[in-house]
Length: 276
Image (cartoon, rainbow, N blue to C red; front, side, top):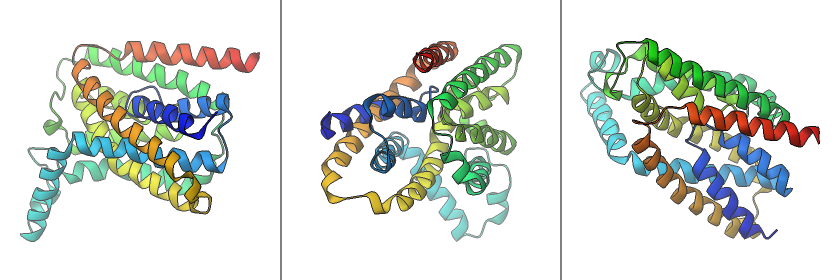
């Protein structure tokens, strides 16, 4: 298959799956095995394409991110230490820092071990486990009367606990967004607010991971692959931007049960393919 077609397919795949609770890494591993697109070139390409999805999130949440940065820098300039460290009446950088810290620690310690389990059988198990966690989050949501409806009501403890759930995403196929959104539901955050925080948390988390992967794969980046990378990056950016906006529109009215069912169905397909 021509590289441009592969780039286009993977760009669409990355854009749709990166921020939905169905695991982009799992889909990319499976499709990569199906198309025979594996090895160092594939790893480098996956990193570049993921950067397209990250840029899409920055675009969608640009105004909120700009205000967060502006407020934080103003407080640093004024040396308002107490305001920086105490609970704020709105989302701030401390929430994001607390959400990212667990993943930074676990990723730094277990990077090589994580990369060694990027194979279909582990993806299958992760799809099942992640689907069960989504169902658990939905069940807990039904049993809770009072919950955090708005992202600006998120507490520091909730942000940290969601960050702990995010560590489950190191298991390929589990889904970073699935782990964080499920974690949000379990710690009494609404579907919409948990989804918003998951998307915002994706920016530093995925950007940091992509930079590490890009650095490690620098020897495999060659000029001949530039057009392929551009196609994948651009496609992922456009598709991710559209899918995130659509997801945020429907998630107020649709539970995560269909996503869990899809995960179980995909796991069954993997099982049958491996058994055959």
